[in-house]
Structure formats: structure tokens, C-alpha cells
Length: 479
Image (tube, rainbow, N blue to C red; front, top):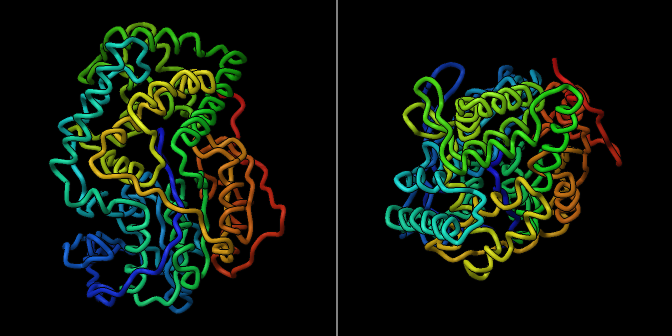
């Protein structure tokens, strides 16, 4: 899954030099059957080991049929900023029975995420989210600029040594150190959402070390921040349009109520019943996105939240927003926004100045009236990030000789065109189009997608071109 603006990617470069950690043995320990845990020390700067090390947290679920074991399948849920370790622990059933039987499933928290030397800039984070995500006046713009700068400044104070090495290229080189520590000549890989970025970078750096790679919910490989923000916002806006069509048919609360609730929250937080905090405009925004990316129950929860907020209770949007950010009652979050921004601010071609961000807002609002502006505002801290951007060059053609790219026809967060571009740029062996309005396709109950992915992982059998799976989950109406 991904935060509103969150993915970038694709790097080509020379292979990482050998270091003292390359051949480190992992010491696995039981951490709740059937899982095993370990840590791996990796260089902070892959090109200068003397700068120090970071600790990466790993989780393994050994193959259920070790006598028939094929190898290791590394999995990553995306983000960037989501704990892959937590994902594997909670979602192992998403991977088919034959995959669980014949592969060791391995996940590692990428640097700055989860238990891997996590970043923490939370003192300023609440103030950043309390700002109006659609600033219209000079005062509102000044407030969101101040909050964005404060967040970036806090990260600089706390993590000045780590931030220069938080890009996609470093995580891809970490992945190869994980491979070496596992003792594997080749690995298989299944990445969702931003995890497709990590996989594509790895395949470009180390194509000979990829046995089979599935990239599901593919990301945009251009690295142009403004184009990226606009196209993702258009995708989410399209999902809102689909919800609106169903709302008109079913008699639910629609975008007219959303506009009214948003205006009310911008004027002042909407009180929540019970012990929940009031709903700010950002809660309405991210709560809406959470409802849109999971049609079915999500649409129902969004309609309910709109009705409650219209009546003066913001609790529904607080709950949806908290689920989006994996926020716990103590205020902690499973989605490390700090790590996410650290990666994106490193990888993206940033705008030239803070004024350029403001000048771009009008065009984004025309392209995606509800989502465009906040999607760019979510990246405003990059304008003040303490380390320079290091945009990643294009992928090497032919890096995808063992890669299957999956693109959802109406995926709200990773538009279908991104999958087309990634498949073309990486030279993917195959592209699978899936008719779906849910973010990512594998493990969603679609037998067609599941069978194709698992035939590829188990037997290296790719689907013919062109390949398409009909929808098993498309939602047109709800009770």
C-alpha cells in the first residue's frame, strides 16, 4: 500500500562492493512458530563502510515442505515506510498454499522502517497533519509551509547521519546483502506497490541474481515529482468518481456531502463521540482515501463516516484515517511517514523552489479537484529536506528478463499506465493486466491472478502476451 504520494524509483548502477557484512551468517531464533527472527548489520553508506552500520530486522517463515523447497521468496508490501516484517507475520496467508509449502518466505524492514533503525520525527508530525491540506489563502499556505519546514528540520536534527543514505539504491543493495547472508545464489521476489520499486531497482542492479520476480501494483518510473503527483491523484480521483456513481445509484452520501464536511473540518476540527480525537481536514482526506482503496466495506464505511460527520460526529473519519496510517491508540504508527518521505525526497526530481510548489497547485486542482492539491502538499517537506535529492537514472533495458509486472485496470493508487511504463522500461518478460478497482491484485481472492503468479514462482512459467484476468472483486453496489 502507499501513502498518498508515495512511490518513486528505478536505478541503474554498478554492483555494490564487497564489505565485511557481505558474508555474515544469520542467527535465526524462534519468535513465535512458525516464524524465525534475525538481524543483519549493513553499512550505513554502501560505498564507505567506515561511516558505520545499521541493523536490519528480518523475519522468516520456513517452507512447510522442506524436502520440496525451491528457495527463498523475499516479500515487500511497499510504502515506503510499511514494516515488511509485520506484513509477513500478519499476512502470510495471502501467499498461496503451494508457495508457503515450497519457499522460505523472508521479509526485512528496509532501513529507517519498523525495527530496522527506525526514524522518529514525531514531535512535528502532528502539527503537519493538523494543517489544511488544501491551502487557499496566504495564511493557510504560510502555515503548511511552516509545518513542513519544522518536520524536515526535526528529521535533520535527529537523523542527520542516516538521511543521506535512505534512498532506493541503498535498500536495493541491502537486499543483496540479505541474499548473501541467506546463502542464496538467486532469490525470488514478490513486491507490492512501492515494493515494486525496490524490486525493479534490484533487478536492474543484479539481474543475474533474480530467479523470478513479481511486481504487483507497479510504480511510475519517471521520477518527475509533479507528473507523479498528478497521475496518482487522477487515479484516486477516478476511484472517487466510481464511488460517486454508486452513491447516486444506492442513495448513499456522495461528493456533495464530502465537500461540505471538508469545508466544515477546514473551519475547525469536527468533534468525535467517545474518546477519539476530533477530525481535522487531513482526517477527512485520508479517511476518504482509505475508503476508496478498499471498495466494498471501505465504500460502506466512507458513506457512514460522511453521514456521521454531516451530523457533527467526526469519529468515522478518525477511525478510517487511523487505519490508513496504521495508527495505534498511543499515537504510534505502523506506517513510518519519516522513512517514506526520506526515501521519496531522495529519489524524486524535486521542484526548483517552494514557490514552484505553490504555482503547481492550480494545475493539480484542475486535474484532480479533490486529491490533486493534497497529494502535492504531502510532499512539501521535500522542499526543505536537509539532504539533496539523488534522482535515479532509468532502468537498464532487459533487466526484466525474469520479471512479471501486474497492472490493475482501475487500481486507485498505482494507475494502470504506470505498470505499462515500468514493463516497457525494464523490459519485463510479461505484463499481466487485471480488471480490478482494488490496490494490488495477488492474494485478493482472484483465482486467475493467483494461478498465473504461482505458476511463475513455482515453475517459471510465464503467461502468454497479452494476458488479462477478469475481475473477481469489482464492486458495483453494496447492501
